[in-house]
Amino acid sequence: MPVFEYRVRDRSGKILKSQTEADTIAQVRDSLRAKGLLIVDIKAPKGGMQTDLNDLKIPFLSDRPPGLKPIAIFSKQLATLINAGVPLVQSLTILQRQIEHKGLQNVVRKVRNDVEAGTPLSEAIAKFPKVFNRLYINLVRAGETSGTLDSVLERIAEFQEKDLATRGKIKSAMTYPVIVLVFALLITYFLLTTIVPQFGGMLTQLGAELPLLTRVLMAMSDFLKTKTIVIVLIVAALVFAYRYYYATKKGRRVVDDFKLKIPVFGTLIQRSAIASFARTFGLLINSGVNIIESLEITKGTANNAIVEDTIENAKNVVMVGEQMSGSLAASPVFPPMVVSMVAIGEETGALDTMLAKVADFYDREVEEAIEGLTAAIEPIMIVFLGAIVGLIVAGMFLPMFSIISALSK
Image (cartoon, rainbow, N blue to C red; front, side, top):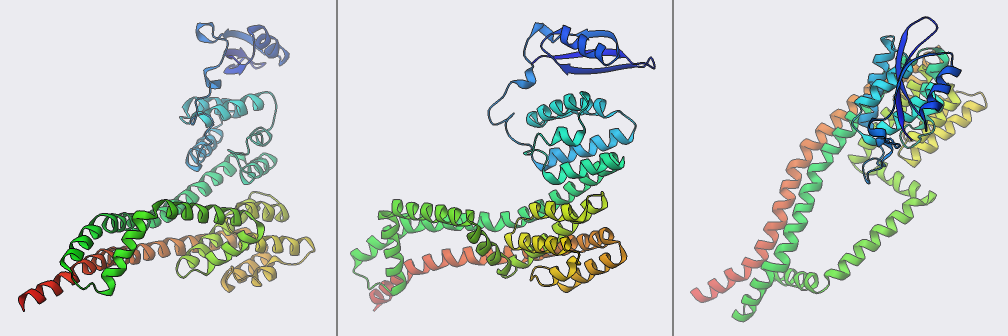
């Protein structure tokens, strides 16, 4: 649908500039007159095109949902514009032109058109659940109700920036060991399928007595060379079986419970879950969302079935008029300190403040855990890689030492 730019004069005589979608200029003219606006001019799409270039879909570009970073930037900029006194429709128009992500640009354009037609912002963004999640929508709705949309958007942006920072640190911490592990597997495969067979053939011709380590390496080499397809199929089947099992309710609970019990990594997952819970729940309460709905939304943002069950139990307890701290105390996820701070917050009416302190504390805990994990993993992975290569080299050269010793005699 074509996008027409127009300038109009409102009842106070102020000139406003914006754009709207319509099939013809006549439709734009009728729509503006119906709103009681005096038309200054209307510009048709350049070149007489009857389709909006923003509607043209580019595979893997326009249909690709935006990540958290462009949405956080959008929230921050929208909050700044609104706080500066720029009308919402005009703010959305400005941002639409500046956004680089085509998918988000199209969404903002459609949201702006809905808002211009009188739809509340929360209802307009609710049409795009893949871009704006339930947390975002409810916070915007609360901001509209309380008249604090700019401050709510500011808090959303801060929340998303912290979430991005935490994810980035965890990703960075995990990238190095994954790269080293993949590198180790590739080296092992190369040595076992290329170097070991050559040494094995030479040692066999010399009639050397092969030690156990060498025989094991040669057997592994033969297996890899003849059964590569079988190995690939087995790995693919295991991955498929895991994904199928994890997709079930029981499977997800079992796997997520196991994740929390993994040494070192389980503690990191737990601390991250607590920080996310406290930050999300506190943000919702502080923005005016009722506690039941806040818990339901927070549960939807958890990435662990055990944490979700804990939040669901807390919600059920609150619904019957009891304090949620008692329910949290029965869960292995939340330590006594967190339970105590939540209990104090419930008793004093400062739950959002206490949750903010919990979130800040566990954000620091997560950061320290990541730094410690990174420092510990690097030397471990280097030793691991060296041990694999050293084991293979030793297995190949041990028979050579025996041959040299026999010849010297």
